[in-house]
Image (cartoon, rainbow, N blue to C red):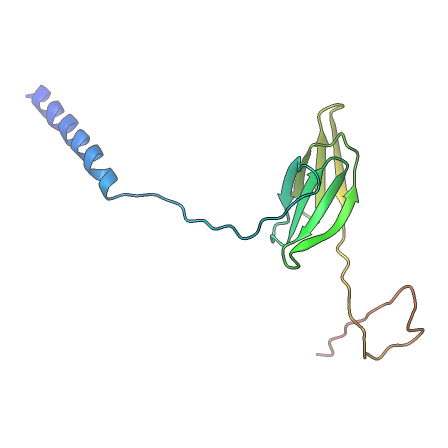
Amino acid sequence: MKQSRNLKQVFFLILTLLWLPQFVHAGIEWKTLREVKLANQALDVTASFDGKLIFSLTPGAILVYSTEDDRFTDRIPVDTRYTRIAYSNDEQLILSAADPATLKVIKFDQIYDINITNRTFKGAADAKVTLVVFDDYQ
């Protein structure tokens, strides 16, 4: 009696496994957003948490790609021994090298160009440094 019950359970399991794949399909949809040509081989790649910046580690440099501008916006020179890169909180890049075993943390700040054409300003129009002040009087 017990053997018959076990046989029924095994039979039910086999039928379920044969029948289930016909109705359950797990797939993935994808599309290429952009393809960027690099001048040098990419050793490693990481991105900012918001996805606006992509950092490509190449031999001797980190290339900074802006997804908003769809172009490389900067280049950070680094030692050629670094082969891995990771993005961390507070706009930090962590580089690692195997020989010699080394970690390097780079803090970076984004600099924004602000167009002051036809804006009120004080001082020389061709000054090397411009201080822009934003105020909210509410």
